[in-house]
Length: 207
Image (tube, rainbow, N blue to C red; front, side, top):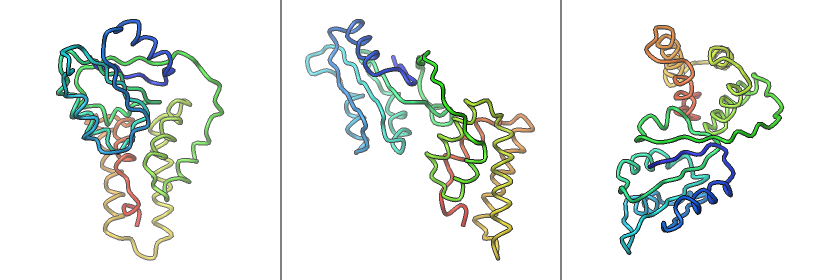
């Protein structure tokens, strides 16, 4: 069984593990950013003593999420996986095997973002930052279509300031337009389509 935990206090998860699985061997990876092979080996391995195991992942480097998700298809029946993060991008967990998601019910008062903040971040194209801002804007109640409109305005503004528009930048504009067209036609939904674009964006795409 795979359990995804969104913003659940770490102590609460550990307490649940101790109560429900007191005899399981516990292996923890917290703040891991090394070779994904280390996690993969633990996920796929059987206990040396033939017992059951718990793999507890938390605050894992996003660069290795795809590789971890692929490995989750090979979990032994005797292994339980708990994975804690602030949130899980829909675009990245599409290929994840059957899983349960639990989320903290605690509501915190958070100052709402200015929606144009994502436009200011766009030229720097730090995808984790763009994705986090996008998620907060959605949580604040902004529609994906509105966020797309802001990003499209910024892309056109950047283009106006260029003396020449490179083929790479033209492709970036085409990708955004294609996604918008697909969302309008129902081929994809705007929220997921825009999320995927932001996660794929790199500095060279805006050159």
